[in-house]
Amino acid sequence: MSTNLIGYELETYTFTIEKGKIKELALAIGDNQKEFLQGERIQPTFPTIIEFRLSQNPIPEQLGLREDKLLHGEQEYEYLGEIVPGDEITLKGNVEDYYIKSNKRFIVIKREFTNQIGELVLISRTTIIEME
Image: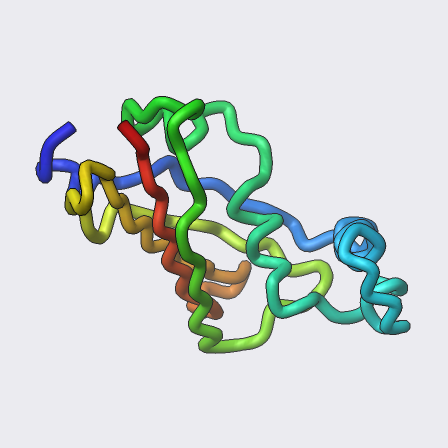
């Protein structure tokens, strides 16, 4: 793997925010707030569900990474608008940074979340660490 990964564009996909998925996350993390259990409002970390949804072409495959050597190192969300149940969110992403530190490879993935009316509602950054 080399630094030419910087700028690599990931698969673009669309995810519909369903009330049932909001409730599933609330139950999974033990958050019994009524609006989450009824799927009326998303949790602040719900974008993780969107990012980690099953893909025909997962990020490790797209980037040639070994899944058995990966760690999820860091996650950051920058909310620019509201994401609500029923939204169709399209994710576009790329490799924003790549570096080696202590014999580990760090890959920073930046994703932009755009709703069905073209509003950029969230930017996320995920740091993936590949161990040697």
